[in-house]
Image 1 (tube, rainbow, N blue to C red):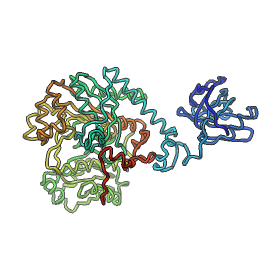
Image 2: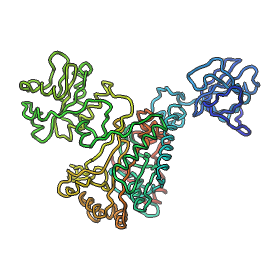
Image 3: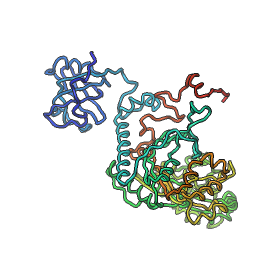
Image 4: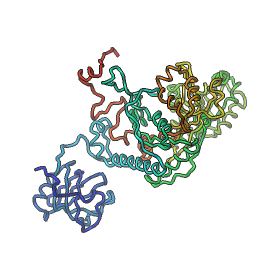
Amino acid sequence: MEIETIKGLKRTHYCGDVEQIGSTVVVGGFVQKVRDMGALIFIDLRDRSGIVQLAFDENTDKSVFEKASNCHSEYVVMAKGVVRERESKTDKIKTGNIEIYVEELRVLSKAQTPPFEIADNTNVNEELRLKYRYLDLRRKTLQDKIIMRSKIAKSARDYFYENGFIEIETPMLIRSTPEGARDYLVPSRIHSGKFYALPQSPQIYKQLLMVAGFDRYIQLARCFRDEDLRADRQPEFTQIDLEMSFVEVEDILEMIEGFIKRLFKDVLDIDIPLPLPRMTYKEAMERYGSDKPYVGFGMEIVNLSDLVKDSAFGVFSSAVAAGGSVRAITAKGAAGVLTRKEIDKLTEMVRGIGAKGLAFIRWIDDAPSCSFSKFMKEGELEAILDRAGAQKGDVVLIVADKDKVTLPVLGALRLNVAKKLDIIQEGYNFLWITEFPFFEYDEDSDSWIAMHHPFTMPMDECLEYIDSDPGRVTAKAYDLVLNGVELSSGSIRINDYELQQKMFKALGLTEEEINAKFGFLVEAYKYGAAPHGGMGIGLDRIAMLMTGSDSIRDVTAFPKVQNASEPMSDAPGGVDDEQLRELSLKITKTED
């Protein structure tokens, strides 16, 4: 079969948009399926909009009919013909009532048999699909997700442009600055022995844009972090990054809520009620054991410490005596599902994330079964059941330790149990988390570090505790959470030179370290900076949730896998010795 060109033939319609009977149309796409019935041939032609059926019969020009009979899956063709009513109608595709009776057919590119069928319902393992990602992306489910991601980006630009924001690109090659994760470094050929870093975020540059007076900045910024991957993380990602001057927390939250409402209406035609609910960091940890809680179901954490502080059960009483707590969650109606065997599995799970063990009360018979009943005095077990809100048929799961263990362990356990019980409600459960601690104590370095970043403004009433009691300092910081996933993080920034210096020193930075890491920002503050703040919204994460995907890879055109490699291109790869010499680098092999 001779390969043809498109000369003189111009596409008039996408396959999924063909509808008017009697009209002459030209379509182009990939052959999904060929059904050759001898005197009749039907070809399902696919493009990003959907599928349309091409029809050929004994009245079709012989050369056209012959070309159709020689077509196979994934051939690229263009067809010209008349739209007519389809005899065998179907509601499985948008164009199920019509077909194109083909007058002209051109084969533009042949295709060998692909390593897997291009179909939405596929059992092919992800490793193979990622190796042939360009084929995997032909599947409608993935194309729809990538297209929705594009709509999210457009909605963001439209909204922020309409609200007076200016889109400004910040550099990709920057100086390495400490922002929490490990930097990707880029060696400089010209400046031998020195390195650029790829930005973890545009944080410092967008603050400098506020110093420069741009007032409202927006960017769909590419960010890079050399950290271990998971379902909602990639080494390179995009955030809808923004910064505003002359604002306080309320102004930024109101602006973001307006964007969320507009976005969900634009893309999903869903009305998100405003204002979005809010919760302080302290309340979120106390009730849900997480600073990004999934609030679409109950099973909140309850504190049993005051009930068991004098208990004969040493696990409980010793935890309280050591300044820790005893806390529990109650799985309603779970006694039939959470058997002793299942509880043993949960015990292993919590041990794997830092707990010493898991106590339980399983109330399946008239009297509850309790793992610590022999230590209970009269009335103690009843008091625990009452506090936990437990009734017959329920299971109470209890952890005793320091708060930094009990809370996150129960938070993780809560999600695990909810999935087992299938009680997580569908929908979009937004939540603002506010008033984060400014500092968190790092036991490895025996020092206080910034929970967000060192440019965050402390709450006004906490300024006096910066030196004397860092643990009491809360920040004008806020996160937006959706269904247990952190979508965005932001804060009001410090805009005062002296306060910024004070915060650097509270974090243990010397004058030399301040100048080496942040010198250009500190210098800029000497020339005046308007009060400002902002945030970065994870475009990939919000696309993942809006498309109902389980992994961020589904909304990333060419994603990396767990070890940060890309199976399709086999990146990262080696380079030759000449390239290394130009960069003054040498590869040294170690036993590791």
